[in-house]
Every structure is written in structure tokens, then in C-alpha cells.
Length: 315
Image 1 (tube, rainbow, N blue to C red):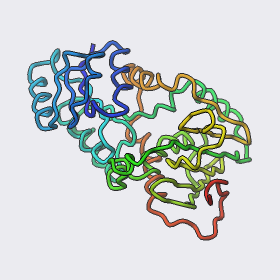
Image 2: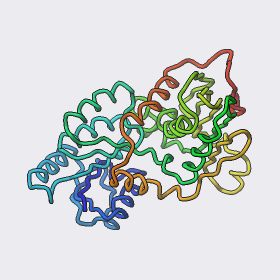
Image 3: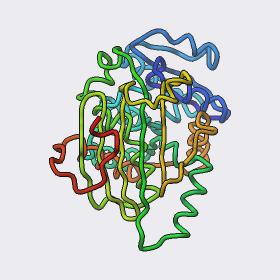
Image 4: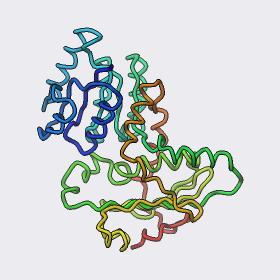
């Protein structure tokens, strides 16, 4: 049994990490969040030490380290806002704990260089949560695509619309300096999935970018992809609205829909099991999608697109 600590216990994604820690037979010994609405801990680890100040959490974790192997934190799970991820990874490594960090591992690619150096110096590992790579159906799809490689590029369309209220733009997620905007905050793991399936980036083109929506196209080694990401409810299909749903996720490959909704909630546990079994995804795995999203969100929309345009891009 390993000891875990959790940064960001009050956040949206924290329950998936709590599930993963519990379901892999481990225990949470310390957690921190500036917000104290963390009653959910009672359902998982009621004896876990909790702090609202990162400095006191840091001090406690360091104290546990000095108490010996049975008491120290072996893994630190990081669910804080995007702009704090690399700082909290460094905190984990400094206290001799492996880091398991939510996507994105860092907001900018150059931050990964210093993390790699500190990782080597610390002797601890930096892992990131690329949960779509452990989805059973997506693994089978990748195996099939690799077996069927040809000189023809696949035609791929990605549409991800998840309606968000006004609160979103007043939170850290709506602050581009803290979240990286919609392209990084929502798009990074989809772009990672596409590159994992179809190879590296040969060209990228931005078609529209606002705080609520972004669209563009990327040419990969084995696919041409048009994509759209949106938190604007007006982009939801009528059928989705009529059914009372708030989100629409679609990836099509050569006109065929890719369905991967099943077991979506259990993927974090699968990531944790992989890490604990000696696998896991590290800094090198995270780098391509972080480099791509940085290039997209810092580029200017093309006035005369050369790559395919998503049909909702000009709405």
C-alpha cells in the first residue's frame, strides 16, 4: 500500500483521483485546496489531513517524509489549475514523491525542460493523465490503424461542444493566462489522442478563436483533421438540446463515427493501475500535444484557409 497526497481536493476532477487511489488499494494521507468544500473526503479517506494553505501542506508532507518509509508520501496527485501544475510537480519531486498530474502537465513546452531536469535530479517520476490512451476501444482502434497503414490519409472530424454558464468566464478556466484558453484546457487531450492515433503534425491552421470557441485544422502523418471546440450552447445540435444533454462529443474517421463513451469514468483508475504496475505516461508523452496547443493558441486565424474547415467554424 502506498501513501498519496492530493492537491486540488475541491476541484471538479478530484473525485476521479479519489476513486483511483481507493480502487487501487492505496490511501490518501494529506490533501490541500484553498476552498474548504471538501466534504467528499469523508466518503473516501475521512482521516486524511486537510489544509487550505499550500505552505502548511508542504510542511506536513515534509514532516511525513522525515518519519520514514511507512509514513512518507509516495505519490502526489495534482488537480490544481493549469498554470500551477508544473510548480506543484516540482513540490512533489522536492519532497521525494512521484507526481501524477492532470492534463496539461505544463502550460508551455519550455516548462517541460526544467521538469525533466528536476525529475532526473530527484530520482522520482513525473506522470501525466492521458486517460484516452488507456480506453479499451481506442487501444483496439489504434492497433487496427497501425495494421492498415497506407499512403492514403484518413479524413477526420472532431467536434466537442460542452455548454458552460457565465461562471466559466469568471473562473480560472476563463482566464487565458491561467488555463491557456479553450484550446489547451479542453482540447489538449483530444489533440494528444489524434496524434497517438495518426502520427505527428505536418501542418496546423487556425480558423477561428474566441474565449468560447475555437476551430481549425491539422495535417497529421496519416490524417487530415478539422476540429472545433466550444463552450457555447448555440453550437449544440438540436437533437442534443432536445434530449436535455449539455455536451456533444463526436469524432468521425472517413465518415464513420467513433464511439468511446463507455467506461469513460473509470479511465483514471486505469491510468493509476498502469503507473503502479511500472508503466505510465511521462514528460515525453505530454510534449507533442502541449507544443501543438501552444502553436494553435498563439497563431493568427488564416484569412485564406488551405486545410479543410469545420462546418461550424463560420457560424
